[in-house]
Length: 191
Image 1: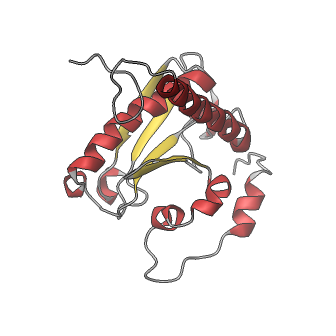
Image 2: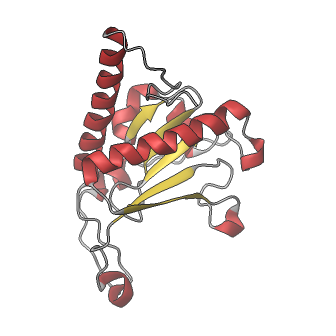
């Protein structure tokens, strides 16, 4: 058996309490407790979705875009949530570029347990940063993925990027910028 020392996980393991029956998915419980956002690694909250770090990431900075409303399929989402997911993917990729400088991204969702969804009752979108040079022997030889930075450190970087984006949007509005903006505060071309 292979072992990888990860003492930072002990806090998470020791704090685990099984949810009471009928309380919804882990995402529903996170959505209902904004006062615990830092503890749950919630990076941002929108109108219909929130962004949270994946506790079991494929790569450093692996984020999840989660609708507040618990639905199992993409077709079950309302139009406002579809739109906010698309806009949030763009924002998340911007935050990750600003903080981790990835060379690319994997973006997608797994609908249903057969497709690999770990929480099939609550659809969510994965945004996974990727680096060209981040291929090594560990996954192949040892069956182990190495995450190069502690989650809390990545979380703090992402929060700073989100805060910076929100400040930039507020400054643009305060300066009376005449350029049109989308619902997410980003400038649009007007087309």
